[in-house]
Length: 274
Image 1 (cartoon, rainbow, N blue to C red):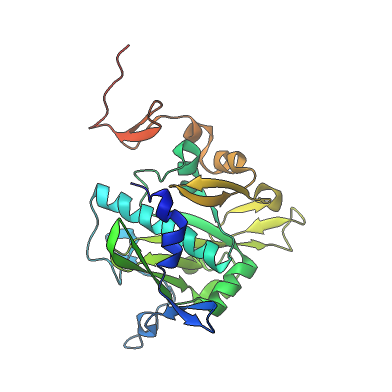
Image 2: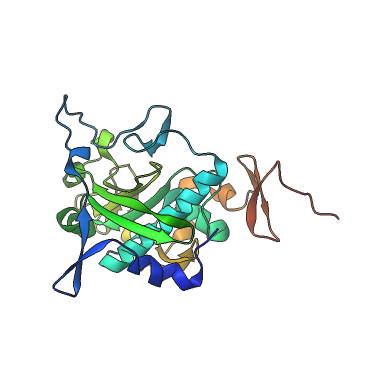
């Protein structure tokens, strides 16, 4: 279910809905501001709002929960367009958390995962907020013949660096405006007063690590698209999930097939003959 090599980068980037500026620079069209600035009622402290019955769908765009196969396809399109866009605008980003664990197994999204997790640096988040907040990008591919719009939205509370801001731990999102699925974008910030000394990075969601665990970033692929991952990816995964998560081949109603390198739902898994 991956984009072909012919359109992986070229067609994806060329099909983005950019308005030409001075014949060379490209500026994405701006999304309707009223989506984020609704003043018809009291303004909540929490910026991003999800469906009440599923926390991994944006409440403004989702009409319901996608079925298994549709959800996986939506996430594949989501990450491929996200990575293509960030490469195009020159913003460095890398996989983290469950998305990084999916990369560990077979360089794909874990089939039971319902969202994606990436990070950027603090200067990059400020750059996104200044130049790309509420920008919408349109992509048309063989898998999306009618095209689809993706919204890059920065939480205005990104300027608050404190982990006490529990309602706004997500600094930005890349959102599929047709289905409501999204990528969580968090910021890795240097903590100059950390008890462990210099070089400590922290996120508002409570994750902390020394910068040598992240940098220099490694180049690899994810869902058929070039991507970056942390330098000490294995240590980060073990610290977050434990060693069992890197070896257990039976999880969440899926079996990992070592021959096909795919997670297969138990309903469809055929035990190899001995």
